[in-house]
Image (cartoon, rainbow, N blue to C red):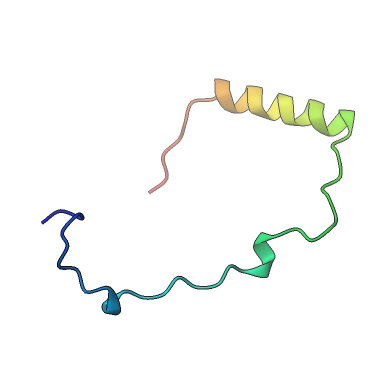
Amino acid sequence: MSSTDRNVDHALAYPEPPASPLWHRCGSKARPLTDAQKQRNRELLHLAQRKPRTRTA
């Protein structure tokens, strides 16, 4: 069966839940990163890209 079938009973589908208010920022904006934070993020990104990935069980 494909998803384009016309004999779908839409009454059985659940309605979409309302969006959480936590997903929206009301008014306040994120603070910009300091130069030290930007440099630290760059260093961590560079380290993560060089480091081999480890698998956890």
